[in-house]
Length: 126
Image (cartoon, rainbow, N blue to C red):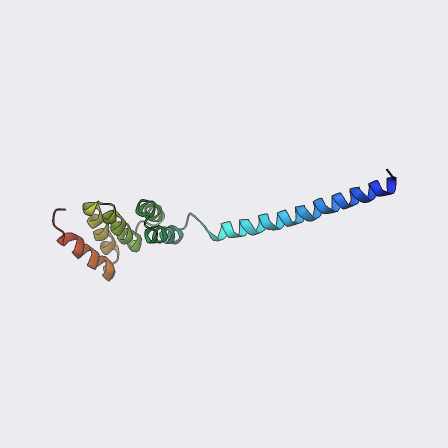
């Protein structure tokens, strides 16, 4: 094979590797930027994940996210309240009432939590 053709093939191969590396680096930087925006050690992020799980019908997963939010921010009234609703959906009415009472202890203005608490306390056989 002609040495000039061989050099040309090597140059093309090296150029392709450089371009591929640049694209891969750019994708890596973008993915890290996205990861920094989704901080799992943020109570609001965990709360939103819990709400999403509840809307999807994944109440156990929702409870886990609300618990993570409460570990990060123990006085997070909305997380206490939503966890109470998810607990009730899973068949734990007594725990749900405790959780809703805790939510109202931290924020008595949560009207939706008052409504759920009243509804759950009125249920027979709890």
